[in-house]
Length: 120
Image 1 (spheres, rainbow, N blue to C red):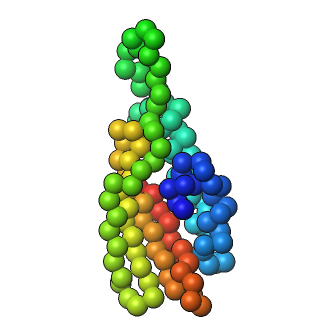
Image 2: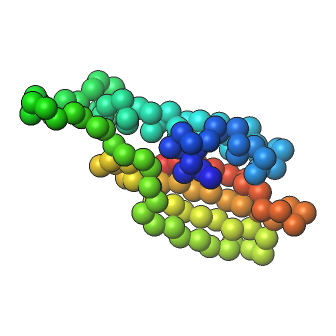
């Protein structure tokens, strides 16, 4: 569902029901930050140092700059640090940018709930 949020198919608030009440605001805030990052990439590449748009020179006539495609998952690594807790490291790709997502799920009353979500 996190990738669907990043791609704009779902609002970040949908992650609230998959989180514990205590961690829901943080999980949703991280999803919003990730969505903003994807939107920035789609608007145009920027340099981290200056925040200015990078241009690659004039485009050939008749060709449109489509920008990066949807966020995709390249690799998923899971581990179980203790019974009832699972941590996932997810390698994501957007256009020519690669980044990571860390997610922790914990078992609460027979339901898996997100307690941590981070984009790196």
